[in-house]
Image (cartoon, rainbow, N blue to C red; front, side, top):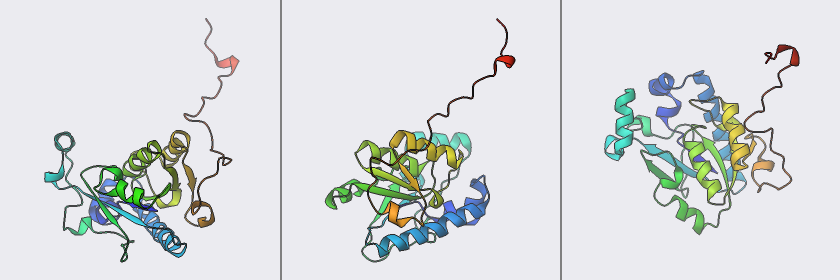
Length: 216
């Protein structure tokens, strides 16, 4: 199980509330569900990996700094700050922590991919935030590198798009299995070929009734 960026600046406090466009209660629910999922993973003997983000200016590339200047964005999750601390779920002794330095993809954090290789991991279960940013970036790379991908829909939330749109996209493009934290019997095993994906992507347009079509 990969817990992505469950940190204060993304989940709680004034920075998270000002940034998240939906009801902040949704972030609290995601954090609580992720805590339950982590507890279940530990009970099943499933390894839990913690990925965190540090956004200090010295870690930012030129394009990141340019974007922030253009959009008036302030850096988040500064090293050593309350905002960078884990929220709702903290590593226990023996659980690995990987740090992303002003980037989205967990595979860009030092040691993440090598750790998976050493552990002979083939299936990643993603939780955390945000579904359309860091979770999606990490799931996309995971799929391209041959990992089976599962996303717990009630343990993540999207920032810029609707949750349903992002999850539907991951199902269709990455073959991701999407389920919920309380179905550990499902997400604790590898996906099966027979599992059906839900719906086409992009959604097919509804046919236009003949009576409403413009005449030639």
